[in-house]
Image (tube, rainbow, N blue to C red; front, side, top):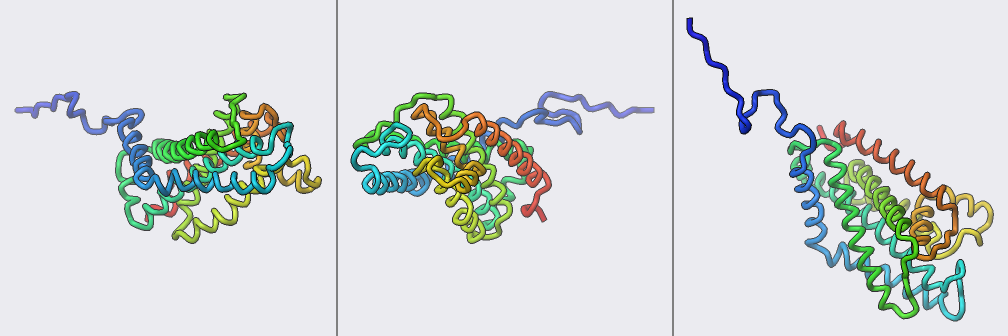
Length: 278
């Protein structure tokens, strides 16, 4: 009675059921991240330099209108007070635009399947999308920061580097995760534009970028303290000025909690294929 010999497992051809990628698909994660970076970098005039120029126009308008004379805020010239807020505002807005546009364009053009079919876990998808959005935010922020050194009367000197790193990354991650949720939810560009126009921009403009909340009425001050964008901008500005308009410790706790909640929500909707799998 002859017996069929058992197949010999080799390193190239493991037995059925043995995972080829047992832990983290580093190559797949890197590939998707590079795809995200190349996607916005191919049109860098629109995705990097245009936001930087727009931010400098804000600086020009407000310094001319309000920054003349000896006007000071928190003990600093108004120009120096304004610059850090404009930098981080440009960074977080572009992080949001990158993640939501990537998913939305993929859904509309039908290329979302190129992301769903490869052997990438939910965590790997999240890390790649967020890292790509943060990269775009960092490039925009660096462009604005360098340009501001050429602006007369502005000296964005770094005093607390840890605050710049923590609040800058926290703000970009928060908006990148929000962008993922919006990109999954939206069915057309009008939906994403509505979130940008009625949520992201108002919250960022009414977050203490151009003023200090201590001068606001009590009700407006309380509302500002409930705005997470305020903590991002105030904490980032603290890294340049060494003086804060609000409680720095409270801001760190609030942003950490929001990011954890958004991360859990993004993981849930991506893992279930909400609005991207039929």
